[in-house]
Amino acid sequence: MIGLGHFLVLGALLFCIGLYGALTKRNAVAVLMSIELMLNAVNINLVAFSRYLTPDYIAGQVFAVFTIIVAAAEVAVGLAIVIAIYRDRLSVELDDFDWLKW
Amino acid sequence: MSDAVFTVAFYVFSAVTVLAALGVVLKKNLVHSALLLILAFVGVAGIYVLLQADFIAAVQILVYAGAVAILVAFGVMLTKRGDIRESNLANRQKWPALFVVAGVFAVIYALLGQTNWGPLAAAGPEDSVGILATLMLTDFVVPFETAAILLTVAMLGAIVIAKEVKNSK
Amino acid sequence: MENINLFVLLANWLRQWLEGVGASPDVIEVVMDVFGTVGALVFILLNALILVLLERKAAAFFQQRYGPNRWGPKGVFQTIFDSLKLLSKEDIIPKAVDKWVFKIAAYLIFIPAILVFAVIPFGEGMIISDLNIGIFYFVAVASTATLAFLMAGWGSNNKYSLIGGMRSVAQMVSYEIPLVFSLVGVVMLTGSMKMSAIVAAQTKVWFILPQFLAFLVYFIAGHAELNRGPFDMPEGEQEIVAGPYTEYSGMRWALFFLAEYANLVAVCSIATTMFLGGWNPIPGLGFLPIPTYVWFVLKVYFMIMLFMWTRWTFPRVRIDHLMHFGWKVLIPVSLVNILVTGIGIKIYQWMGW
Image (cartoon, rainbow over all chains, first blue to last red; front, side, top):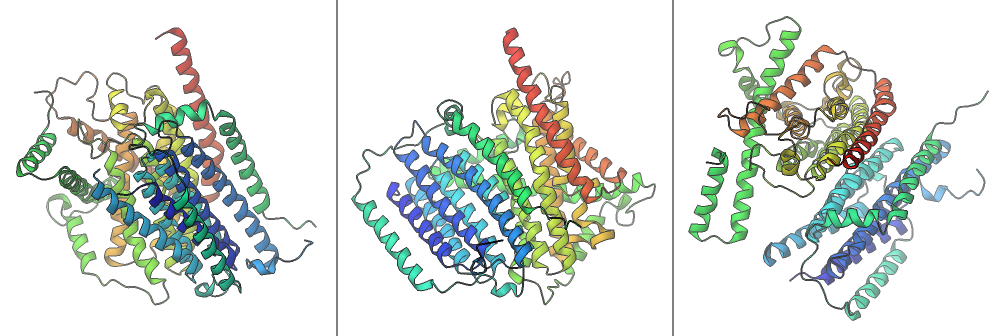
């Protein structure tokens, strides 16, 4: 019987995979992808809570919608920044982004 | 849906999601990572269906698999340099990161076991779309409108940042 | 005899027989879904077979030539022989391609094309799954069709393929927005995203009348989503060889075209359901003993003929004009349509209709 715990463990696993990627990747786009994984893990938790704890008042699903909106905005701006820096430096390696002045 | 079907479906979707996510992080080819990311998103959408959140599942497919992941793949292809097969390497923090991540997972897992969640609902909402729509336009109307502004600002900001700067003579 | 048609009768028989044999509810559901999927697949393949010939005949008609006329009477077997030829061809996989991405792309393009048919009401009671979020499901699944073009363009490792893939992504992501917005007006009028409710709301007036602007936007954006007609930029032969299809050969190449026709049928089916009254008979002709699914197919083919007409009469648009048109004309127009629809609904409520 699958219950709330199973979904939460799945969320935790996905979050940890994303965290590992965000900590270890050299490429800026790869870090963005890892952050998306972490946000998805959070969404699984939110939806699972709303399903099992408050099925009549599904605020968790509303939060999930807002998370998705923010994630979409984040990716758009993040990629724009990556592309702008790429144009200037011809690199997307995060270790190269260590200057303080443009 | 009976328990057996539910269990099988849960493990299939979880396996797809977790394996694809591992691929995203471990693959050395950045384009493969981006494509596996889409598979992971689709797996998560399946999990939402199991949680009786069909609207969220459709939003997940539409926004994540249909737009975000494709944008990411687009970004990868636009910023390609050198050998694509060696484009997604790890930095020197591999082992410390693994240690931290294992610690985080252990803490979450331990806390999950200890927490008392109270009574769990047997069945989810019948008409989640209807409830969601009502909630969005009553209790959550301010965040809802703010989100619209956020999206507009993000779009304009992205255009301004990514726009090519013309060399002024 | 309440309009029970052949296919519903067959489905009911199958269900009763399974219950009689003593299958568990799970098994019955799975078997019914499998049969529904097989039915949709047969429908898609039959249509693709007919449409390839129809398109060539239509093109020939618009260009004042004969078109295929060698195999069978008036060339009706042409498509069958073409498929046999393509099947027997060598499946060339160039050395430098990204093998997995290249191979999977040809199959992946089929998945959204088939999944979409799960929510299309072919006739009264003939819908595989009448989801609560029916039309939104269509939008979500259709949005992933972009992926196959991107994968094909990237995996081919060819600059023309990559340009074609990039173009198709830019085009499809941009035109998805007016496509979705044009459907919002209908959802507002119906108050439901369920396909059966949308069809039921159109027994008296088809939504093409109150939503004509939306229909036009949907029609134009549909061309761009299908990469057809004046918007077949991704495969502009004069500029980029054949876009994402350049490196494909044999059956893999044919799969792309099969999927294109499956998508054409899907987009036309949605147009029929949303704007042309679905399987409802033409007002005033309801007394004719024509089954609902025949009405549906007739309307779908009417839409398909419209699509072919535009494809063979308009020249190809330039890529920057295409983007300008999408962002600066179609999106504002569809937003205005939503606003006007909302005001109209309020006025109707205020007048107490």
